[in-house]
Length: 412
Image (tube, rainbow, N blue to C red):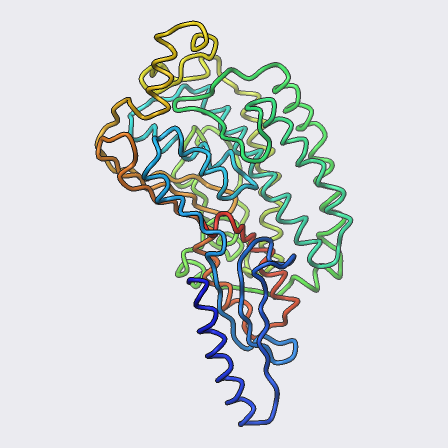
């Protein structure tokens, strides 16, 4: 829906207000929730038709930060697209990065070493932890419980320090390469990961004790924004929001990638599909992510940190600085002068919010002929209006927060 559509919505709502007033004399009003509002967690708008505190009707207006990523990608060589993926769900950028590299590797037919796959699993699960940590702690804030947020948020910084050791960035990571990693992980990376694994589980349980059985929090979240499994499927829900509705679907189990089949973990599933179930599913998924990381650390294979694909893998930086051939090859790869096969591939990963997919069409040129990002956030947000109708404004804020609507992913 374009931004200009909000004028059409308001005109229709003005007509509805007159009709309602003519019927029983009660007064309706229009409320713009957003586009810039602390409770929306991003730049998007909901035009609400209100009867006092109750929501009679609602319409979304998205597109305020649409950056035309797919069209930009059609004019960028493959290596230069990675920074675009960072800026979709920026709460878990490494999952976006890894998903894009795996899509390219599928197109190029690159076989990735086992060690690389395990290292990717560690990074993706750390990113899932931070994603769920942000969602659930902010859900507490939106219900008036600020303490849990302050208590647990330092843990996100600890993960960002791990990212910084790996790639030099914290939020928008631009992490990895085709076939693996730009360098092997230093002892400092492993030390920070082990320290996080020692300290974080207890902190997460403390956060759980602060919020999960809090009576006020439960009363605010139970039975609000419920959606059935059938409706969730029909809307195209994936990820925690679908599992909270009672559907046992996780891409890591159903269509394993990056050696996820080597790890034992459970898929948490809810029953009611309400705000509280969405919170509880994410709480347990963090525990399962910790379980996966432990196994990856224990079973970490020996071997190289990148695949042997010199046509697509950037040469070592020290060689680029000292060798003309390496400098030329570096330039050719980054600028897209290395030919790629003609083909059409789709690859998806289990992102923080659900199925994050990349549909890539190549005609053999230096840039994608077509690239479509399947953003889970954009798909499940379509159900938001149905989930809040008949409820109260304060409930709508919590429902949006529990869905984890990320504006960057919504408006790619």
